[in-house]
Amino acid sequence: MFSKETYQNRREQLKKHVKDGIILLLGNVDVPMNYRSNTYKFRQDSTFLYFFGIDHQGMAGVMDLDSGKDILFGNDVTLEDIIWMGPQPLVSEKAERIGVQDSAPFSKLAGVLSDAMKAGRTIHFLPPYRAENKILLEELLGIKPGEQAGRASVELIKGVVALRSVKEDQEIIEIEKAAETAWLMHTTAMKMARPGIWEYEISGKMEGIAAAGGGMHSFPIILSIRGETLHNHYHGNQLKKGDLLLVDAGAENAMHYATDHTRTSPVGGSFSPRQKDIYQIVLDANVKAIEAIKPGVPFRDIHFLSANIIGNGLKELGLMKGDIAAAVELGAHALFMPHGLGHMMGMDVHDMEDLGENYVGYDEEFKRSDIFGTAFLRLGRRLQKGFVLTVEPGIYFIPALIEKWEAEGKFTEFINYGKAKEYIGFGGVRLEDDILVTDNGYRNLGKPIPKTIEEVERMQE
Image (cartoon, rainbow, N blue to C red; front, top):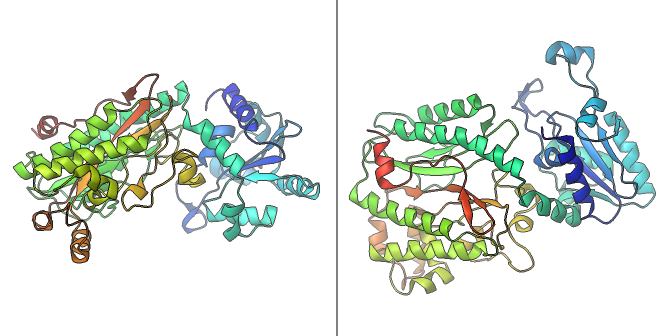
């Protein structure tokens, strides 16, 4: 937990973004895996953590914008709780730690909100993403779950995004703590990428490293020799010589700050000439995109920069042809990179996307594209000092997509389908780093994970 002044200041700053009424922030509760007392590992809501800091189940925070009063709602533990969980601080003690003077049992929350609604006051809430909180919101506010996202407070969403987007120095420290664990996760995976190893052996080792780092993995590990499937969580393949192993994984530290890196390794320690060609194009796109990062630059432009590098590299190999700039503008490159260059990162690995991707990655100046591939760019707006984001170009050979586009005669002026089909079975290459936008440039966060062809091949020596 940060200092109580941190949470007090964050709440005061948030109040400047919302005009009047009451701000309601719900924490999370335990979620059962298969029966009520056998739960998943608890993960607190990130926005609740950001403003109220209490990493415990069954909490809610209220900010009264008219009186200026903040209230923490929750229940003190019973003797039965103590038997199973051990002694716990009182809710009033938790409130004191975060600079909140008023606290109350959770049962009192409904009455406070009911009185406010009877008085015609606005209740500002965020779109819920968990079923338990959707049901709770219906009980508290009388809004059906299907209507809650549409009735969430846009003022509050924009205020939260404005504050959480710009990371404090203490937050960067926490992200870099998580990055220490992520470095060990990825270098271990690279060393294990040998013929005969099963994917689940590597993913299991990585999960153990994440837990040993004091937290957990920041999202389910993507690890596969079938890297052309962008979010491949199946870990049942046995590695063989000549495969490419794509590993997209991150660590979340005890303070719930995340990392997100991707590396692609040759099974057995050596890239084939064809693999080197594709890998080097992706590496060039990754490095050049990172070098272009600085405040004021639209991330959408950096996305297009990386896409052009990939397109021109593929043209040299005979996979693409024609005017590459025109091909990228029309979306032809998306046959090989059907996703965006990156996303915001912080307490959530896709930071704040529960609030709505367009609120996080776009604004009045930059609107989301509806072109295939570019439409999946999660971050398009101008960069600001303090943003933390990922840079993750890739090249993939997806049989179903190649077959579909060829059958439709799509972009035949830009794509050599005969050549593309020669790469079916290749898999995919993605390289991803976590970047902080600084005063006049950027900084890679964390200890560098091997990335050049030479560095990666040396990992299995």
